[in-house]
Structures are given as C-alpha cells and as structure tokens.
Length: 357
Figure 1 (cartoon, helix red, strand yellow):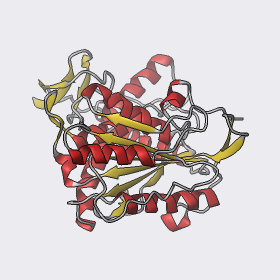
Figure 2 (spheres, helix red, strand yellow):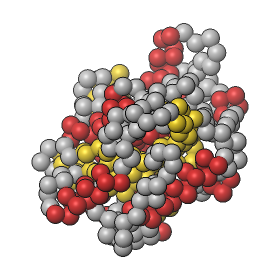
Figure 3 (cartoon, helix red, strand yellow):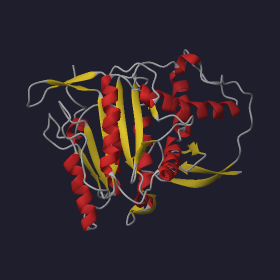
Figure 4 (spheres, helix red, strand yellow):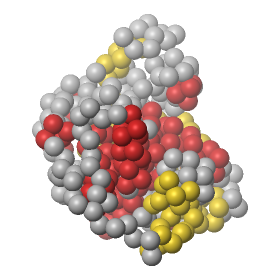
C-alpha cells in the first residue's frame, strides 16, 4: 500500500501520485483531493516506446510568445485567503493557475509554435531555467511532453499498457489524455524553481521596474525575430493580428506579457517599460490578495491596475483582481490568454480574443 491522492468526484478513475500544488483535482478545479491508501500496481512488460519518437519533438518556428512575470517575494509564501482556505499559499495558487492554463492548451493545434517564457522577480529579476540550465523559454507542446507525456509513458509502461501513436481509437486517446493529465506536474517544477531562484536575488522586496525591464527586452528581441541570446535557435516569426477597434486598424505582434504581484513596488521609482510601446502595450496585470487589507495592499493593487494596457477594442484595462478564492479562475484565464496571445482584457477573453485577420 502507498499514499496517493484522490478526487471525490473522479474516485479511483484518477489517482495522483503527488498532491497538486494548489490541492485541487486537475479535472475538477473546484474539488480538493484527499489522501488515500492504494495498492501498488503490478509491474507489467514495458511495451511503451521510450523516449518519445522524434516526430513528436521536432522543433518548429516561434509564432507566439507569452511572457509570465512572477512575483516570488517571501510574502508569496503566506496564505492567500486564510478565511477561506488556510493551507493554500499565494505561490501555490499561482503555479496551479499556470498548470491549468497550459493543460487547457494541450490539444491546441499550434501549441508547438506557441512559446512560454517565465521570469521570476523579488528585489531582482531573471528568467528561470529548465532542467538543462537553459533559460525557460519553451513551446507549450514541449512542456506538455516533458512534464506530462514522458511521465505518462513511463507509468503506462510499468503497468503493461501499450501507447498508441497512430490509428488510435477515441477510447484509447481518452485514456492516454487521462494519463497525461494525471502525470502533468509542471506546478511542482516551477514552484521549486521559484524557491531556488531566490538565491540569485534577495526576495524580501518587490522590484516591478526591473521585472518589466527584463520582460520588455525579451519582448523586443522576439518582435525583432531573434531569441538566440535567450537560447532559442528555432526561427522566430511572430504572427500578427489586425486589431479592429475604435481607432484605425493596426497590427500587433503575437506576444503578451502578464505580471502579477501581491504587494507594492518598493525598490525605487516605479517605471513601466511597456508604457510607450507602439502601436499598443501588450502588458496584462494582476493583483493577488485582499486589496483592502492595508494601505500597502491598496497601493499595490492601484499600481498593478495603473500599468496595465488599455484594450484598444473594449477600452478596459487588462487588469485582473484576484481577491477571493472563487476568483482564482480569473488567474487561470489571464495566464491562458497571455500564453495564447489572444486579447488584451477580460472582455477579450469572454469574446474569444481580438479581431484577427
């Protein structure tokens, strides 16, 4: 017998080897998993081809980029909504939202061309690294493969199941998707990376200016079509959307930046590197926590709202306030929208993004 985790809705249909970072089922996002003792599965014959066949991992070009700019200061280790759930930290809430956003893109036909970069910041800022020590700028497909498909292949192999690559029936595809969903533990990886990266800069402060400056540099490089300084050898040719709003039509490159924080900038003057970006700022923002808790949190929330882009279609700021547990779904929404590089505000998300031609 071994300790596992189970969703009370899925029951034994979905058993997790590790508790998800935010404590919720990956299929039913409002259902907390519970501990359960399960017998160890019998070892079967390794029928699954491993590693992943070459055709699954062939690189393509970068056509879209979502830059996630993540506050990892020490305050993120505190309970986010203690009156609603005492065991959920702000950092766990965030990594759970990132995980859900990426899983929502696993069936996207162009997820091999949609890339994600992750920047962490405290008193300083830097791009976190992958398992090979390179800057974490990866396609959604490669993330799903490494943190979902590869572990699922190994688990299926141990249980004697054969993975079907070609000509799979619907029930086989559903089973394989279930394994990938259960195995996907990207939330654990980035949580550990966020804790580790604090060693590279002090985390007892919040430097939004430096974080945005780094994100703007990465964004400009992507728009210019060259990410080699960031370890990306694939060709970069961002798609462009034609925006039809109140102003004359204009084009915007397929890149979005999303920054969140739980407090105010406290390292010198706050400067928004995206403020004068032409033809349109691509910065989405979010504040996590009770904005009315103190003068500092009110100031922090106001700062995040003030630096957000103004949507050229709906004239709304691209700002998300996550001040209750129920609103955590908004965080998944904005992470997904920035990763999919579609839209500038919540109205865009509700109406399926911008007008693109």
